Length: 84
Image (tube, rainbow, N blue to C red):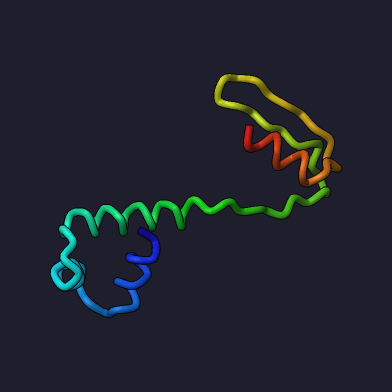
């Protein structure tokens, strides 16, 4: 799917033209494009935390559990706690 979307982007063709040439349903191509954009926008990222004025790191999970950690936490541990 990603390879097809990247090929379409590089082709310079409209979605309609690309779908017709490659014998894809237009709705399917548009679905793949939207999924590709969602995946691109959901890439994990990191932010720099400053120690000045920060009391600790608070992680609140959707079910209500909250963790309060000291500012100096190994990145691997913090990453694993975020992705639980």
